[in-house]
Image (cartoon, rainbow over all chains, first blue to last red; front, side, top):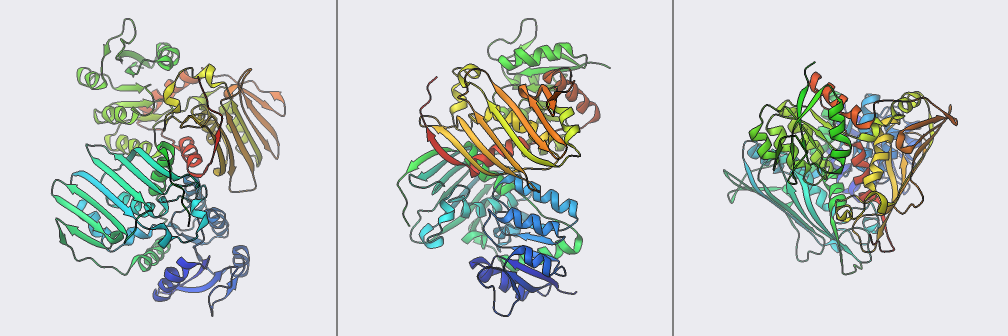
Length: 308
Length: 308
């Protein structure tokens, strides 16, 4: 197999921590260039803008977009128009409509579009999905709680309209839920808590309904102190499944299951290579749809101001 | 052609004004029963609940759901599970996710699901779509302004979370725009004006982007007095198109075009009959996606309290 040349667009924390090491370890890809206004990575060709990269390097067939969600549509559109395969960090867009628009553009251009949800590749998720596939679900509890000061220090954009607030981590939980649940859920009620000085919620309580009798709720909270809780518990007619630590550990009726994979981001690149090889795309807007539905349907509660 | 027996579920103003007369005039359908807690229609068999109808009349193959959006999912689910073809008033659900869930349930059950957008059948819409199909769009202006006191007197649910507020009429404009525009748009910015004593917006300013350079905005306002404005103006490289009166009148470069059809609701039933005949469904969540995106991305502005 020849390695595919790939460019990283947006060299921030997530690119340095995850994308660049994952590409370096993957025989399917070679990091051929970066796009960054702040200099890129030592020893790798860098371009100031995506347009400059697309013009200078028509030989690079794939790009991975790691910038914040709001400018992502325009970058993806330009890369698709230039005939490149595109991988998108989560969430795949600032709106649901632009995700469908990009899917259509990629299909018309005959390129691969991969809208990633990294938490779906946490070690326990695939086994959880397999185990749940033939079960009847009675109850779902999602607890996704972390300290925003620890995980998003000084990030002003998360509090701006479109910044998602606590749904920025919460969408990771929703990406797992929409992957592993054998039946589709939809939001039936939501309460969103907005700090009185902010435009996005710091906490959310969600209630879901499904095609059968199911008791399904999720609590997202950014005011958690003393350690994160990222867990999903699902009670079925044949026992209880629990994913903890963001999906990395899996328990069935309290007994931990052996699960392992290459890691979330290495798995993403492995899948991107497979999609390119097979001429396929993978674009699932379901997690973002639940978030948009929460804003559409949710009751707004004003809470104490938040200061970094 | 044999007429298909159909039941109306929810006998409110829209059922009496539109659905029942349209069915009466359509040789493809016979109104066989109604579901209403308040007695239904003179001379037509009535059931207190949908479950009672489904059990008593397995011979009625189609139902038309005319109740408010929030209980609509559960009614549609039950009707689909009972093997009936289902027509939904707009919007097709209280959330985007439930529209996709219903589409899946209908597909699995092998029945027809028709999520209607009545404004798409206004007299000028089909001709507008044809005319725009090969044009390059430069500019889109939507003005959808009416007096909420005139059109929704005392309707408390429109001001509750999930009640959509000014998007209840605005989604009609969005249903036309998504039908006639030859390229997909997505929201890039929004300002939503909430009366300080209400949970849904009384006005909205939306800005859209698309795959090319397009200047696209929409203004919805419920504070309009002295007559409604329901118009869409689209400037292209080959002239300007204008739809007025909710889509019933069409102008190209100022010259009114001759357009006519059977009327919005008669056209809906004609289409429902065709979908049943051909074993097809028609479920387009695009207008509701734009509304959810507006809540997701929109900046909230607090305005003067609103009292009926």
